[in-house]
Image (cartoon, rainbow, N blue to C red):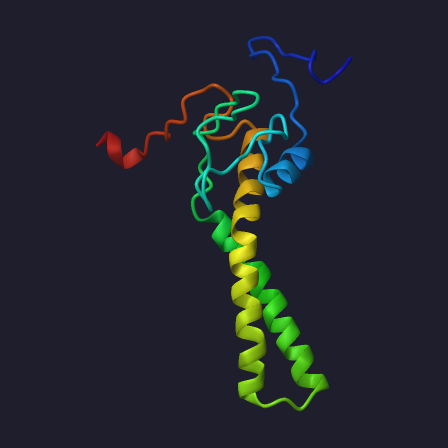
Length: 147
């Protein structure tokens, strides 16, 4: 039996699997995670509400600060690692290091922002997160709200 046909009594029918890596690659490329054809962004980091090609509703996305966090981790590791390696292998002055590494890190940070946000949106779409599964994305009740 395939995974899609196995159900337990009382469970809802399983949703079709969406390929996570394919959706993330499409998002990274700035394309719709569903069809891979339509544009994902209307401006630098503002996603479209729906795909112009397949009509997939994309306004549900909640990438929030996660792409920026990923950006900091990637750029920080590459920048610090590169600086440390360059410092160990050369005798450049501090000013020369600043002139080299600050522009590299700024260009990397700006250049990775949109692709990382697209990949996060693709991940959310593939996993039916934040309304992409045709369900309301309502927060769970907090115990303190009941009081």
